[in-house]
Image 1 (cartoon, rainbow, N blue to C red):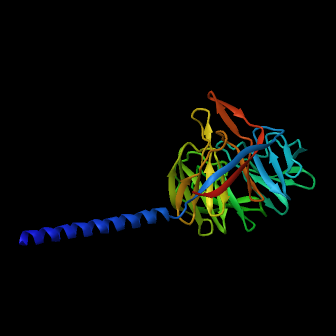
Image 2 (image 1 turned 45 degrees about the vertical axis):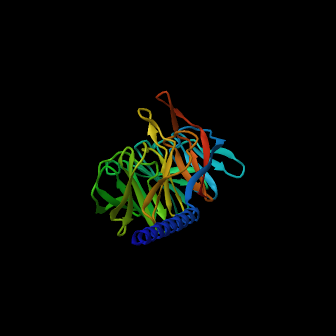
Image 3 (image 1 turned 60 degrees about the vertical axis):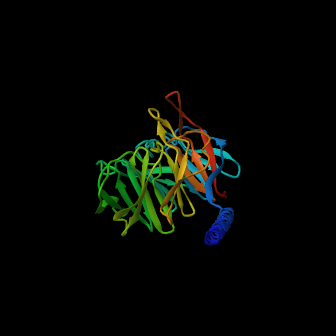
Amino acid sequence: MKVQIKLILNIIIVLTFLGCSSDNDSNNTIDENNSEPVETLTITSSKSISNTPFSMPREAIIFDDDLYVVNEMNTYKYDFSSNNWETVNTNSVGVALFPYFDYNVSFIREGKWNIINENALWTFDFSTNNWEKIKEFTDNALISLIGIYHNNSLFLFSDIFDKVYKYDFENNTLIEHSTFDQRKNYGQLVKSVFKIGETYYFTKLSNYNKISIYKWTDNFTKFQLLNEYQSEYIAQGAGFVYNDNIIFGLGGEAAVGNNDKFYYYNITTNEFKEVKNNFYEGRYVSIPVKHNNKFYLIGGQTITNNESISRETLDQVVFEFIEE
């Protein structure tokens, strides 16, 4: 009799346990079905919107809703509304460097387009369409120049040396502003300084396929390392700001091929992710511009059979966060 009672109690315990397990499994299934959708940054479109009357652009800027581009010889103006190009200056030799391990800093000051690089500071008068050389540099302190124009001040540094300079516009001289710990140079994005809010971020390649994100702090005297990310080859790639995200990608050279992917870094989460969908082809040394919250790439080169081919196109890239 005791054996029968013990057996019945054991059966009841087992059935109770199985019932609880079934309830837990049911609850787990419900949780999975109710998981929050994830937003993924996605390229929803990438296409050429215009042929360009030039190849190998060196620098570009938006002024009064028009796009201005300078190459080795000429300066061009593009009207977005009519989709027309106009040559506005045919004497632009030496104004800007080709951004293949050589870089320009471009900005608007006192209604004029300024371009500074390791060779000189130039200004462009939009009313006369003329370039003027303001200052020629004879030393090499500005090799692979990077910088920003902020609150009427120009801060510059070289990716080769360890000094930050402030430019004195009144006397057209460089004033040493600070020093920083230099790391080995592996090239840059074509544009490597990004402004989000009132903060400037700097991207540096710590290898040809590894990017580091820094915050420029303390009155542009220090660089704070935030995070690093392993990607495909992105030297000579392009970058944009989209809300709280720094988008970067493309890049390449003839010896290694080119990259057609984009990635992004979120300044709030301090995380990197890959953008879903790729650009329609691998491309490097394209000039990135943003106009009316739309993103464009000017020219650049692609690689076929180890040969670099210049693209004579203005391309539009559409990025969107898509719920998945």
